[in-house]
Length: 128
Image (cartoon, rainbow, N blue to C red; front, top):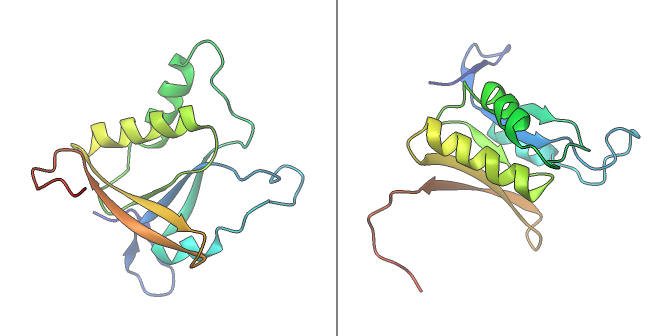
């Protein structure tokens, strides 16, 4: 179920898949601090900060599918970077997990991440 072994406890921990490296990473000065998301699992960065989809999404889709192949419903996506790439990553994860996956959402006011459980096939009532 879990995919990363914690060295100090021997308990497997979830992975927080960070879709793209943070702006400023290449220069050594990331623009945002995501360290508080570490409480949800070990970080795995998928793509460099300047990754983009230009004309042919195929190679990037193939690469993301390979990088996310071990995603489990206990892991999390941290949505960083190009919105088109974020959409593709969410689609791939939903395909792997039959529509159930976790996101970490930043709350600017509280200055913390909140976990969101997504179920694309939810049959409950619509809140408006």
